[in-house]
Structure formats: structure tokens, C-alpha cells
Length: 149
View 1 (cartoon, rainbow, N blue to C red):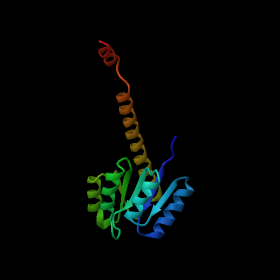
View 2: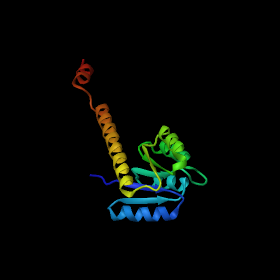
View 3: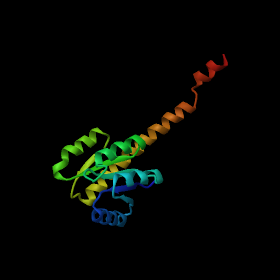
View 4: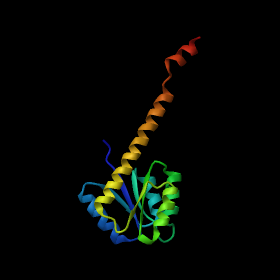
């Protein structure tokens, strides 16, 4: 079974390093990025399943980064990370394709729970895609018979 790979995206380096260490201790494979641009670059180089993305960042903000991720990497699940004052922005993120959102400071177990839910959602979607591709590749007995007539 494939192991979930996460990426934390936040301009607060202390948050990134602390959270990455906590997740690593619990056995998770975690990349970090301090900007939206770095996150997109990481996604081109690594097979990331779930992104935990801060809403407020200088330069490319979280919602802008989310939209770019969903455009270029539609199967990547994104969880928005927000302070109390930006819940409305997190809701905008949900409308733009985010799976869920967390309030800062996020409890590590809650973050893991939401990431696991997002990963499970992605696995279901991947399975549906595989089934659709398989159906497209194989002909039904009726199609085979109609071709021989």
C-alpha cells in the first residue's frame, strides 16, 4: 500500500520545521515549502498526495497557490491552514477546490486526521479513474460481436 506523502506550505519557517519533525516522528514523509512558488516547484519534482497550505503568505497567497495546484495537479488534495481572522478566505479556498481547512494553531492529531481523510479521498478518486480506464480499454462481449458482423 502506498504511503501518504505530505507537503507543508507556510512562510513561518519555525512552524514548518516543528510540524515536519512532529509528523516525521509519527512516521509521515513530509516536504516543506516557504512559498507558493516553491510548493509548485516541489510538486513537479515529487509525488505529493496532500498539501497543507497556509492562506496568508507574502507574494503568491494560499488561494492563488491552491488554484495553481488544482490547475496543474488536479489529484493533489489541499487543506487550507488559516488564522481566526481569515476563515472567509478558507471558505473561498473550499470553493476553489480545497478539501478542508484547519485553524491555526492546529493540533497535530487533527492535522493528521484531516490529511488521512484527504489521502483516502484521493485513493478513491484514483480507483475510479483506474476503473474508467480499464472499462475503456476492454470491450464488452456485445461490442466484440458487433465488430465481427
